[in-house]
Length: 296
Ligand code: KIV
Image (cartoon, rainbow, N blue to C red; front, side, top):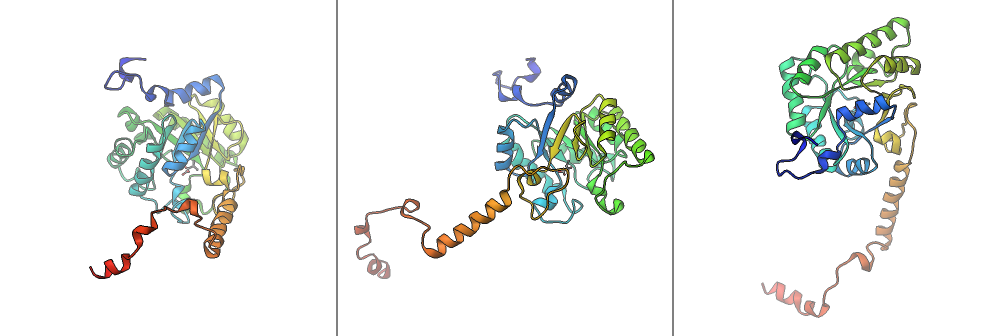
């Protein structure tokens, strides 16, 4: 451990075990798959971190799954910082990446720099993510200033109003060439990793071979260096919808619904709370209490 890695009191800390952007790159070099999940709150982040997931993305997908919007477009910097702070408080090991929301990095490079800095300084993130390749010059400036940036190509949900609908990207030769070109451009600008969303598996595999930085697929097939999923999709926790690229590892939606119904029935039937959920006292203390209270 170098002196730069030591905390101010000189003792070794949990920081030494933290997943860093360079560790992710080393994992790619060793052919070790990288795991990443989204999280938006403290309790989920703790569980994801304790499960040994390498990176946690506080995705702007929280617009849909946490806030009930129909896209990520309405999500604000304040929304993102609020959730990123909660996640950071729950994480000891994983790399926390804050997703820069729509228009927070495309108006001007200065504004992008200021907003990215807020993720690191105020919210405890250790990297940020941005969509598209038009941001390449901004990526270069941020990386030079010490902000690690993850890229995101393929289906870029913040552009839903331009794309029209969620569909596979890069299916024609021209579209595939554009995504490959954009990936190389972002790598040259300094990204530490690249999310490839909803692109054909062979294209994602080719980009993965071409880049030195890790690719993280979501609907990009098994040839990527790692995988990311939206935690609600994995848990069956988003009302009535599991995308094709997700596997449901639990049916939390059904389990939670049943628990809420059971609670309702127990309360209505007088089965809850039971004596073990209540606090006893010496009932002799209550004798004459009403009269005493009324007398003031
Ligand atoms: O916002 C998000 O959760 C994302 C993932 C889909 C990669 O960007």
